[in-house]
Length: 324
Image (tube, rainbow, N blue to C red; front, side):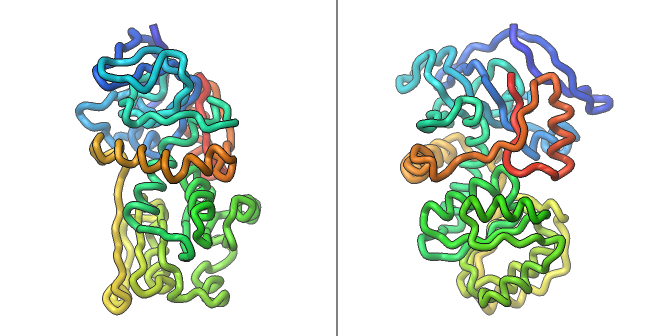
């Protein structure tokens, strides 16, 4: 039997339940889970605002780390006992979880198996949006909003490691100091400073080539104003709201590209390609220690509701994990 987290449909409370350990289908791994990452999508799923796809597990949890317990038919590059971290198709809040083998990654050299649970969702999201969609290149300037999140901290490190100059925003001076230690040239406390004004005073107005935004709302106009000609702006969330009054003239005059995505909607084939490119381009920096997940807190599985409350508070810097 395995333990997993279930959502009460009446009041959205969480409880631990038991069910049978699943068997891997062809192309899948069964993972004995060491830890699972907490993501904002989990909170939305719990609230009924981000339902899982029909073919996905109804159990929350989009990423795990642990050891391979069993391999499905056709899997040749993983064996029982191998340390692994994985982007799941749901089901990560459990002590055993399934994942497509094509979405599984090795635990980087020198990293604990537990810490590796902080990687998959951030790596796939950052690679797809910052590099595949926005096409960030060495020598360019990038602005990362929500820099203190698990995704933001990886985005800053990945962009810096691959040769970009990174600017970022966060909500406290302590978070900003932590982000500059990760490689940001300048981190701006958006609660005490106007990031548009700060970057303008630094001579960067209309000189930011890539903007990676999970905030939205009133940041949208400021992004347009700061963007360089031919800049790419990519959205992955709208924490400050989906609606804003925006002057779209800069979109035309600067020939901007504005795009966005959610990771869960991508096909298995798209994620397979992402995984291969992540191993090629980011894993040398993960193995060297140049990119490392920043772990905020680790909660036991029984304290999953407390972990969700901590994420909802916005007080965290980096990733929140569940230990099985």
